[in-house]
Image (tube, rainbow, N blue to C red; front, side):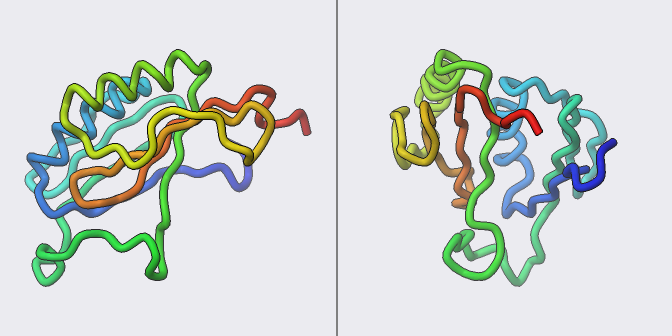
Length: 137
């Protein structure tokens, strides 16, 4: 482990079964395997770390995520190639996932190629390929 590396990401969802199907598709494509599963929590792990989903507080179940409120704006995953970005885009389109922006090159960094989509609770997600990123430190 390296100091400052992300150990895990924990997300809350309104419907565990619906979100499990979504995250199985997304995280399976990204190389994560589903591990622990309980009545209230599902965990996926890969060499990149751990991602969990758990059921949100019942008081919040009727609200979608607002990325412009304090908290998480979006979560971006890396791809090794533009072809992987395009493939996940096609996979999610076939599953009826809400796409915010289709694959395109963006001006954030040279060669930045990405697409943006929502999970079932409105959490904004991204898959990006950026050549030569991260830079050698």
